[in-house]
Length: 211
Image 1 (cartoon, rainbow, N blue to C red):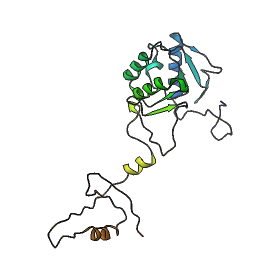
Image 2 (image 1 turned 60 degrees about the vertical axis):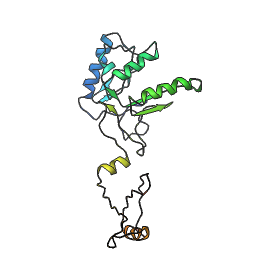
Image 3 (image 1 turned 90 degrees about the vertical axis):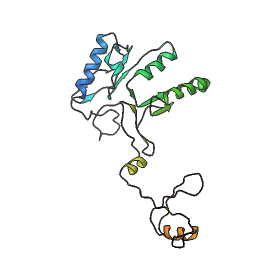
Image 4 (image 1 turned 180 degrees about the horizontal axis):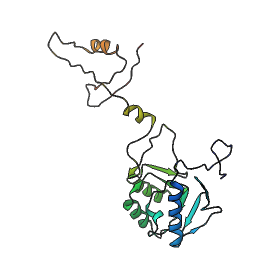
């Protein structure tokens, strides 16, 4: 992927938004290399001010910082496991849980289904045969554990910055009460927003725009 400034056509890797992030990523890379990992991709480990080239590290071991720290940068640690249970144990023990990607073939459907069950309690988004990603905005974007707090999406943003009001009506024998479904509807239809708890056991709400 070409490196460069974000307004240059065709660029895939742009400078990092944090001035100190390259120094932090360099420390992770140096720690891993010192403990036995190798940079396995061309141009990996190179940087120019806040522009850091993607760096793939292999093999990554539990003793390395990049194994347990959420780097949020173009550093990709590759870990090998001999058994699925080792992966499950890692997912449970790690302090982070934002996204996971599973790459598979149809013949592995049963094992992938089980892995999705495990991941659904450890991360907030599971991608099948596609990379971890942000968006579209209609999808919730969040994380578990120390990865995030709250949820981002168009729907959730509107909920956070909105206060809902409730209008309730009750049938009764008192002649002074507004009774009857038709009368209540006539009153409530004059509002811009209607939130209804119906008389059945279910709960329902809907938006009725003013005519």
